[in-house]
Image 1 (cartoon, rainbow, N blue to C red):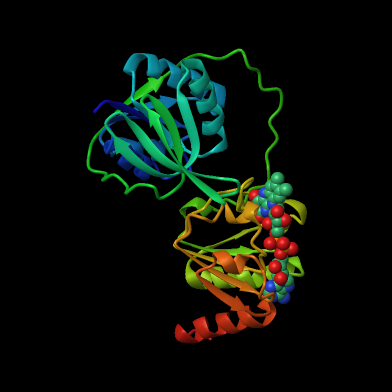
Image 2 (cartoon, rainbow, N blue to C red; image 1 turned 30 degrees about the horizontal axis):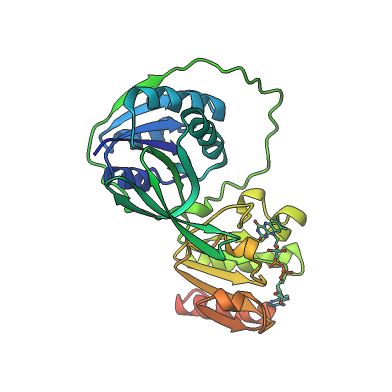
Length: 305
Ligand SMILES: Cc1cc2nc3c(=O)[nH]c(=O)nc-3n(C[C@H](O)[C@H](O)[C@H](O)COP(=O)(O)OP(=O)(O)OC[C@H]3O[C@@H](n4cnc5c(N)ncnc54)[C@H](O)[C@@H]3O)c2cc1C
């Protein structure tokens, strides 16, 4: 056993990260960009929680680096968020240790960590063994959440400033959807002909208790969805229990973001669309006919027509 540093940043599931850390060693948690409520949650896992009072990755890097020197951890575990990736790249460089983002599966061995990671837009999965110490940034649902049955200790970690200066901060339009935590996601693609037609997808998602995400053309080019609903290699990586891909062709850059889904259902009018090769269930149909019919069936089952 040994120390494991868990980096927590909303909206990642801290419970899963702590659960993974506990199977490896004694966790300490670093809270980054976490609200007071979230810090309370972190304390309830029963470990020391170091709070970094900055939202800048270079300050997080300095904080983790300071803790690294003090605790000599065998592993640093964090979520695949942009800021944590930035910060951990600095830490890995500073301490000359191995770092892997986008980790999809982990096995603990006495002399190192064995992890799985997709490459080439998930067309290849590589299994890698990294000796301790190492840094891994994991996808959602790689571990069971830890129980919240302890009383932790809160420590303010003040590492001062860094030489980097932020010159401007501009807010992006975000919807507040948390696709990483969603159990059902309705994915929308260019098969939809108009922004208003997405209301079908929102209605379906509501009936299934899910959220709506989309392909890059929908979110980034057409801007029919906010940027935080963009799924794929350059957007979010999600791992719902059910992913319903509607009017999505199945490009590798999109599919790499949904490869952690338990079940993929594809609705596409072209029977040779590549998505059918990766879907567990495929419906060859015009979405404009199929989705209203599906909504109708679901509503009737719930007796809410
Ligand atoms: C560097 C790079 C990074 C990228 N990153 C991402 C990323 O992160 N995420 C991402 O999503 N993409 C990404 N892309 C883009 C990606 O390559 C694809 O172009 C994109 O995913 C295609 O989106 P789509 O499936 O919505 O559209 P299309 O490929 O145009 O597919 C539309 C599908 O809808 C079907 N369709 C049309 N009408 C209907 C209908 N009435 N009923 C049913 N089906 C219908 C068609 O048969 C077709 O299969 C990236 C590309 C590059 C080069």
